[in-house]
Length: 301
Length: 301
Image 1: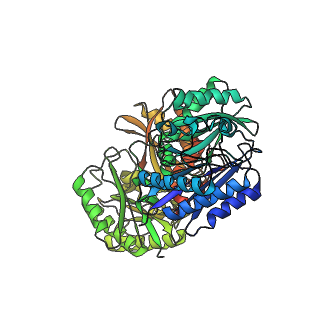
Image 2 (image 1 turned 30 degrees about the vertical axis):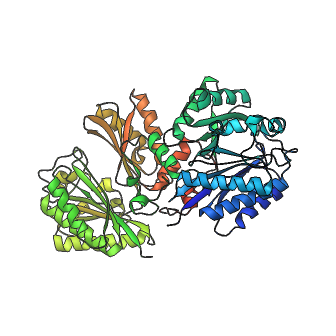
Image 3 (image 1 turned 45 degrees about the horizontal axis):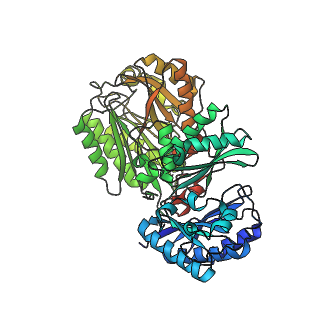
């Protein structure tokens, strides 16, 4: 079987449908690409796309999308509640099948070099593809956002890994490799964003919370939102994060209104959650009818 | 694609491994049978087997298993906390793929006639295959259990649908057709079986509870157990039943210790539960990575 790589690029445009469509078309124009999902949020002013295929077309589609986004999105005009550094803000490669994270690192670095040389954009490599340990963490690279980077890019510690050291209207591109993650948001029954910020601080790893949890408190559609990435959902599962938020929210006299997934979720994250809440001890996927029939026994590793 | 039928026979032996193995072997001896799951419980003194395949071999394997169980199990010696009428106690056919419930009804009636004629066992047809409306409900047929049926089988309203009107040591066989169901048990943090019986009465349809819920309170391994069948898990989902039991248990000062599935569960029952508990509004299977890649997009209807 050929290897399958996933790419989950984030673009700094969630409102202008013409621009969003142009980005999607640049991805779909590459033969062999399976466009799996896309979602746009007007408050975040951001679009997250999920596509997959064999590695070479995936790299090609990522390049095409970065080019289109950089030409069409003007970061000088961009406003949104989610932190961002550029038009094609973050481009992660994810190993899905018959390939390793190290393979994705190699593809990310190749793409980074090409984007620097051909598009002249400043490129930072992050997570598993980082060339500097302090750049493993996306939040560190994105500190100060687009506006801040314009001032600081000439500083030695902010030098891009590839491409131009001056910043244009397309901003910078962050390219990397990581394992599958779960991106999801929890909306609280309050418009008080400070509660979402307190909860985000309590649950995220960097300020003392759960391993593998990144979290921000934002205001979206008039509701306080805890916006998260779970980077290792097998060790730190989504149900434990949700229940910790429920408990923290209770402390502030509010509740969870609802949750939303951004992009796609690995199936086992939901099946494990069901078994935990239903208290189904000693049960695993072999007790699922469709799996026992080999209808969809395959899960990502 | 050929039709796929499931059979989930229940046998009145959960302790003698030699007998259990003989029954399993009689099923596996039929070509084209996929033995999916089997589970035995010593307190219930009962084994539940799940197998599937094209309809004709499935009927053949069901016949072979009934024959083996009738020869090896002596109901005069059988003791167990779960109600039962015979050695091969209940034999339901379930449509899984490219066939209808009406097809299963036809196969159930064919099998019933053959079991009556060749094995001379009393046969009752139940659920969708019932020939009398009052026999749609398994609990009605099983009233008085094996011991009671010995006394009452000569009464006109207890006449079997096929086979002998006298009852031997193998008891009677109940054969039928139904949609997929979820069989599961909840163990309470108490040894007081009356609490499980109160809860079972509160939640089951026949005494005023939830539609499509059958429930009994039993004592298993020294723990009070609510033993259930959910016959329409899309309308009356497992999470709602579990949360109703949690609430009733709280009323009696006890909790849910854990739950167990008997046999197999349709995948959507778990995925729907995860989405409900995680409050993932507006999310469906299309947001599952493996489904979007068509790795296991197939769910039973």
